[in-house]
Length: 110
Length: 113
Image (cartoon, rainbow over all chains, first blue to last red; front, side):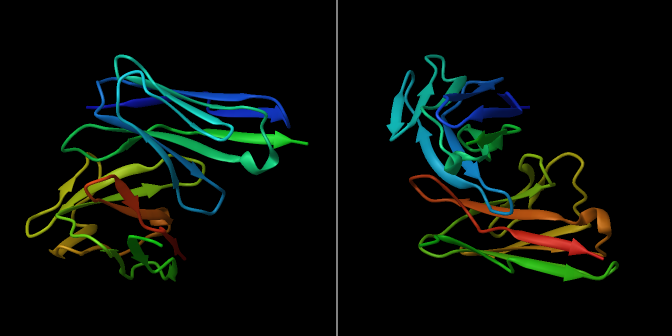
């Protein structure tokens, strides 16, 4: 079945450093979504990428969808302590449920 | 505001009892809803797909007799954890899709003591 792999599992950075998490799917996706989850909270939707090669930005966050629609990345520029949490990618194929990657837990020290 | 409402947010129950979790789509009709489970420091794992008016589709390894799913209307799906045991303690979260994207409920933290 469809699998979504995400690396790294954990990442610790100093405040102000950049951060990137990568996501790969075993199959071509209709779209890919990114979520952020804080400890004790539920996943919060960040963005959805649909088009091949799509790049979207949200302030310091940059999201990319690969040309083959099988991989994606989330890049945070100049991390802040408010960025801490676990970032999940989730792949979607038409007619199926979202399949989540294992997530990347980001910690930031000031 | 939330477009998918999940209730309760948290529940503590005794081992052997059953717990029902509700998932409602507030602004749209959802013929399909999805139930996920998340253990501490792990990802969301799809448990089952809830289909309005028909039987749910369970993922491999999920006991259908233990996790009863009912999707009797276009806006409500329920998950009942029957004869709960401490190992069933987890974060359960539902989702539903409207024409634009998937929406998640707030989740239910179940603790079985």
